[in-house]
Image (tube, rainbow, N blue to C red; front, top):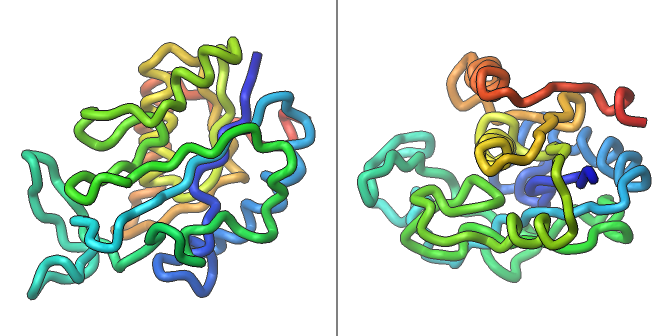
Length: 204
């Protein structure tokens, strides 16, 4: 059985948000249309404490987009975004939530970032998403949302590494493109790992 996995379609990643993904709002219509075609729909939600280490404000003298090292891992510094219980952390009010069976929060540890919907970046803790999918007898996931070159990519890569047949819905994703070519490189990496790439119209 397939599940639709909606990644981080939250106010802070939409136009006007603290970390707006260019044209990020365009994925909402795709999500709303596809969610009606799937028996199982789940979503992820960035859910950071206010003192999260990925926020540039936590590091004096640093710049947005700069990379530091924490816990032996590279960490990009971002503007403060998706703070727990804030409007920016909420899923878009335009997103149809009626078919979403479960929302999995990530990035809750102030000392670790979590791009993937399955694990934090150090794989110290699982979000519960994998267990949920196994319980529902899901063997394939269709991944879409924000952003192609970060949370979507890492969620899809973890899904395929866990043995799920993984499909990326190309027209349901938008990227940050912090550096020119990031989106293309991300798509290439996912393709090399065996992730299938389709348009939403191929599924409906």
